[in-house]
Image (cartoon, rainbow, N blue to C red; front, top):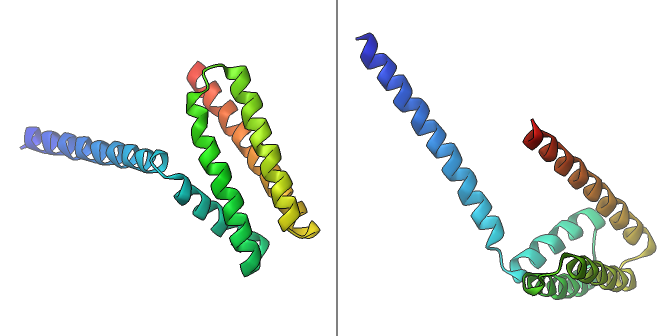
Length: 135
């Protein structure tokens, strides 16, 4: 009887592990497979919520985000890391300039603050992953 319980517990743990890893892999695949249109819509909806965009601003910001998301897809064609970094920086500068022309000064300042906070969180997460890999 003990052998059966141990085997059953092992099978249950194995099943739980497989479900968790397959769900995680599926979620990562879904995130990676989003189209530029989907990414632009998600970003614009978040901006509408946090910045209280007007309907007119929403349309303009969505066009800016779509242009950016489409151009970001082209990064896959750049092999040189230095060239890629320059390209991404230029794209981001163009996007920020475009957003500045659409958003109010208060909205733009709030967006910059949110963007910088997200950048800091990303740096911390990358550092944490680096430390975990070294352990």
